[in-house]
Image (cartoon, rainbow, N blue to C red):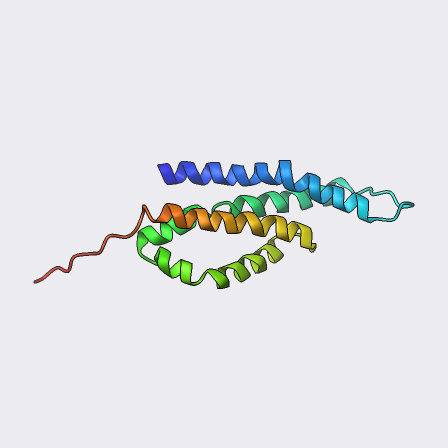
Length: 139
């Protein structure tokens, strides 16, 4: 039950972060980078597609602590193993952010940094939920 509740809260937290922090920055960037003579007039379908894609990307990205806790709890990996692979995870996070966001560096960076912070939070929380060694059963 706690994992289900935290998953839902993290997903909606990612959407709220996108709505209140990321969208104003990105939309301000898009409106200020065009020439003075041009007026930005996106149609509603392209705007909704853009916003929903960002909401989904941030919602899924904010699930990282739950995924790390479940991986460590199930015994698939350990926190020390994840700490050793941190440089590769940083590169992987930026690659995933590149595919999940529109093709601009600003939104990629605004997704990658929270993902890295959530990865570190997941490592801290996973220390409390590690797999217990299984006892061998003798026949």
